[in-house]
Picture (cartoon, one colour):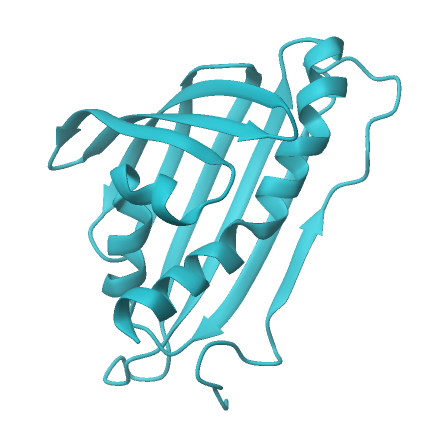
Length: 174
């Protein structure tokens, strides 16, 4: 497997499930799946994803982010979205497997469901500074009106999330 400085031509995605025209938000669930091979370690990428307070510095749609509670097992975090005139806030409980995985579960927000699963997999025997980053997001909105209003904005955010973290890794780690 050959890796470029940041990405390999073998990256996938994003895969986004089709639009849910005329289907109410709670019924209409979407899934986004994306993976990329990069020249950064699983721990480096894990550290970027779990540094929630830094999101406004590099995620153009994030206008605020704070950790509400932190423990050895993870954190509860609040993130504000501002994009295309749409502003929303959501809170998630994130469960961490140190350096390997972050599972995100909705606590409150405009979604009927929001679950995310970040995985950071070492490439080869683990001695190389490289990994495969995988993200799967499952989400739906609590009303048809929110699905129509916020859905397209969140679709765009979800589709570019992994790329934004790869760019951040380039800034932070070189």
